[in-house]
Image (tube, rainbow, N blue to C red; front, side):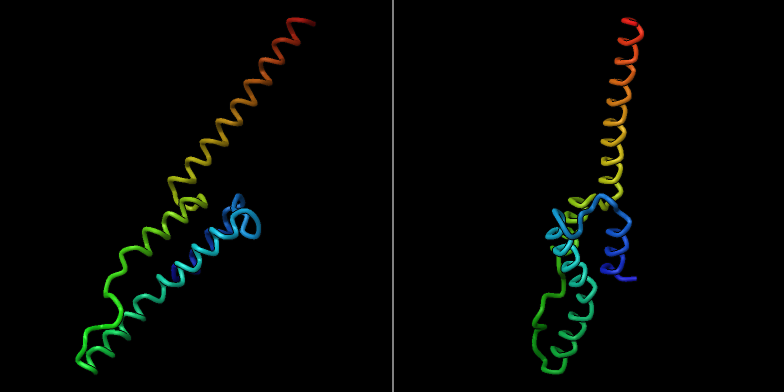
Length: 114
């Protein structure tokens, strides 16, 4: 499975990602980078072959130092990395704890007044 396919799987498994609404641009940018990452080795290999045939320098850089870090930043923004999923889960738990605490306080107030 390539990066593109794996990203599609991750997005489908993340119910909080709004692929067609608020997150659409971020999702599409991440998918575009995923396609580029998957194609990069092929592009470099072809450029190296052409360079060897023409005895010239390859027409594309051998290293892409920006696509992977940028792709990971998009994944973080979408909550698709382990660290961001943990942070989201902690936020949901904290939110739930606050609601539970409020319900307990209300219950105590009602018991005390009743």
